[in-house]
Image (cartoon, rainbow, N blue to C red; front, top):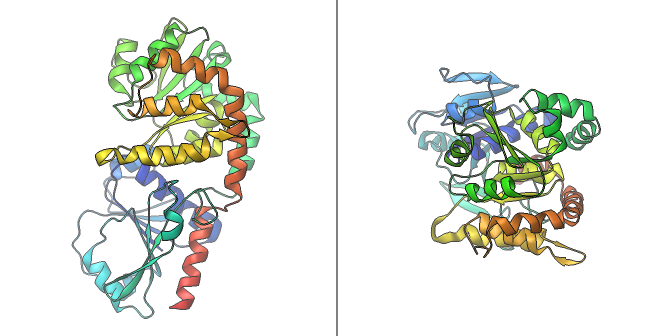
Length: 381
């Protein structure tokens, strides 16, 4: 299998493709070559990556630096399943060699995640390209989509970690988190630069509950630097009022999962951390990747219509906070009012997060669903 990834969202694109590649190799025994055009971003979430190498092995996956669109390929170079992530244009020479293969490889366009209803009608639809069939494969939130990325043992690992307070304390202590900070409300913060972070930090600082906020280095840099009064580098921290803010180094994906599991509330962004927050089963606020003409607001509201509703109706605090965080419908009181409303609803939000997780489990996992479809499409070739 070959997976082609162009890094647009710094960590989301490669995060998704790396998780998918590892799972296919580990759980299904698939030989995977991951073509990626940005090894520097890749190394932030996978420290073993050597940015000087054009080809290397990592976790059983062959990683190729996709430096340009040039190159001559022959059928022997071509994988039996070719995945282009989010409609990236794979090298013309690779496509030409695909057309020479008999049978043709299964060619899939792995699309971005959305809760919009139209994806159910487009999932697995074929399109004719260069004399071959390319199918659109959509992750999603229903059984009529490809589901969400999830490793087979993820739930077991999460339950074991969250059921071991000592292990959780050791994990957080490596970042300098003190026992007193662990006893506070713990929040992970991962967002795009335009989020109203300064407002949120002010609300926490002046709020009635103690908050420990853990933010990766470089995220919300300006607001973090103003709060800390320093260069906001990894391991920097400061306490003001009821808020302690700690800057964390970027960590490998498995440790980021643990961070989400260890926190009480998670602010996440893009697609990869958004999905991992759902599997964490904890309350979260999603910062969606911005799109032209504010199309991302449509995607956000489509998700909220599914997620922010429980047996008692719509959870208004989640919707209001999500809208404001994404620059949609601004709240009159800002985060000084939004955060207390979220706090008041936390038991209800936490229960919904757990129910949602169980609902998503019923859809299977993206890697297995994708592989099953590819095998069926190959047999029909």
